[in-house]
Length: 423
Image (tube, rainbow, N blue to C red):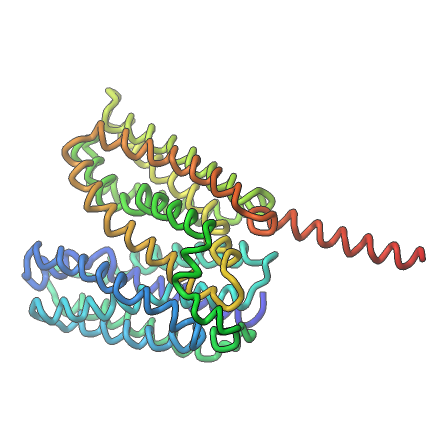
């Protein structure tokens, strides 16, 4: 790992650490501490999603034209201003405006950092680089949330202001760290032929493999991440009788599984076809939904229901650990030269759409119709496997099985060397 990649990973950890301070407590802060009510708190969460959907289509073009670093630095300053403003806002308009700035900054941060990882890695090391990023993100979120939970006091507004100030400071510190990164030169649209400059979104949409991956990505995020804090938690509380403390334990089990399993599964994942790995994740998540069904619809004891519910989140974590070194590198490998920023932003847009639709569908369904809820997302998980196998038919060996492609290149070079020596 080079110096640039090390600093990028440190930056990822810092940003996740800052987000961990505030994300778990945002609803409580707006609705109760500021006394603005549940409606305003819900609007704040909606503003985060809307801001991301507005800026991401523009972010890809900016990253391709200007490079990821200038875009990242601008979004970090924007996010820092938004975080600090949110900690000081005392009325609904100020809170919503600050949330828009913070949401826009967070949204663009992801594809900008992903493009920097692409620029600083080779095809052979990309899976490990993205696995490290995902590991550090979850570790940072967990540690930040744990420390924030001990600092926060719902009777004192100043304690929440401190949390948002720490988050803003983390963003600014990340900007300082990232400003020292010197990434290898990657072609931009200005360097590419004129036909590539005109391609943009049309060129992306003509890439059938990328379109299929985007559809698969929507289902992945809709059926998993979009349910964590909405449908699945509502189902657990209403159908399985899970306590809030047990729900916290389940979320901790998810993070712990990712932290423990990430590098344990990496070597296995790196040597397999990416499409088959994603298909395997669909099967693992199908088992997770069956276990969740037992938790809420079975007739076991409350202890068994709680254990099953916690196991559901742990199984989701195992699937996430398998996806992190698989999906993001595949997006990068599908992108033409100089277009990684556009493709990363497009995939981030798909993720935001899924995260916006997922809670809206899953929340009411999980709370009021538990059996259809489990059946629906069990089918979605099996659909992931089907979509992944279909995607694999459109991928080249280098895209679907880079370890085998790299090994073949090494063998070919060795064979050429042997022939020249014998000659």
